[in-house]
Image 1: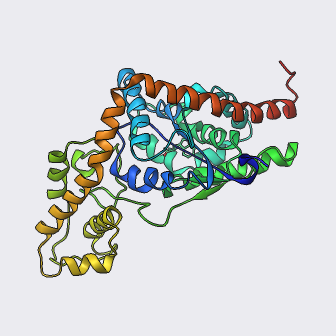
Image 2: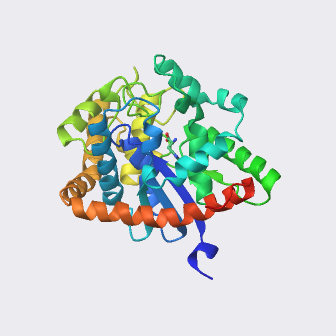
Length: 335
Ligand code: TRP
């Protein structure tokens, strides 16, 4: 038996619609790196998803490459993982069309992210923003993924993917593997430093709320010094009443491996000022080697190009196998 039959398959992606955040590193990429030996892993730069919101072309191109460099610098080994750019494997666009014919208007209308994003982009509620989950379903189903590591906000899209796959299989037989969301237990949700009720996001209106993997240390420290806490003085984990402090504890815990108990003891009798500085310094040290390695890789364009070309070639082999099967089932004449 080869790897593909023994190992389960994982697929995930991040949109290069903004620089990579500390939230995507701690909540996603850091965990992905540990999965490479056990699973057959595919990770993409979801550039086709990114254009559902207007992007500056030069910046999109730059961020896509930066994201690739950061993936590798954060520990995703391109020999062990298939890392590729979504638009390089045209099967994504092709299957997405097919699946949009098996996705219901009502289902898409219920997607929370569509409602949020159309409220935020009221002047550009385009059809792609609406059918985005069909594209995401294509991403997942093309690779017959068993598990899809996502943050809680994407769970609904993975559930819709399952419904689409079940519906399609119901008509045509076993074409698609039914995937499951895979939500890591720790560090899955890093919140904004300035509005800790909301997820840390590159689309945050307040720039201080979000930390970026490639950000210089002085800026990181400035954001941590300004992080929102509460009117008490005690470092204690209590998400409901102390969302800001709990988020900082969560970040510190993942950055250092310390438990919440240990952290509470460490800061007993100390003020929030000390606490925020210590968390900031831990994050600076956590990100330093990644930033340095990503910058080194970014200077080696030929290497990065070889990684994404090889990744696309490998991804395409699997993707077209599924797409051909789908076309045949649908009754399309073989090309
Ligand atoms: N929609 C995801 C997000 O915004 C990114 C994404 C695109 C994705 N395709 C995917 C995630 C497939 C998992 C699987 O975060």
